Length: 177
Image (cartoon, rainbow, N blue to C red):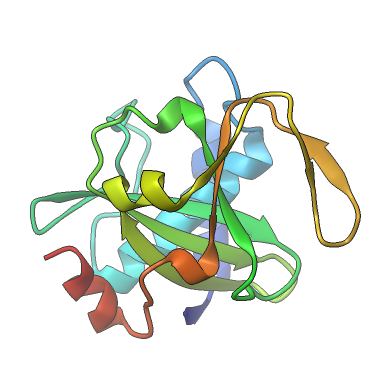
């Protein structure tokens, strides 16, 4: 995993973008503004890290992927947390997105308290759906701390340890070749 300190400028950029545009346009399980902010912040940090164009919200629906890297469609998935990422944690994926044309998923975790974006790992779409666990809409999911939530849509979970490792920017750049 690769930890990146998130700048105040990156946070402000993502915040203003989400205030200006609605990035949840599926009609169900779109994510509230906080969830959209976390997702856009992940995209901004990855764009800056890889020297790619930042999202700007003007294109409307992005087709289900965030970046085209070496002709591969890459979708960045970011979860917000209040603690550092651990190898036994999971990443969530809303089932409404499963049919989008994507080649790879790049998973990130944002530690809101420390302002650290962890680039957690990557996986091909085909491998994701072989390794992930599906929880149908309405399932109660229990967290390690004993709290729980009801899934608002079909939810896929993949364990951090099932992702391909990323330890450097070069690892990310070479992952999609």
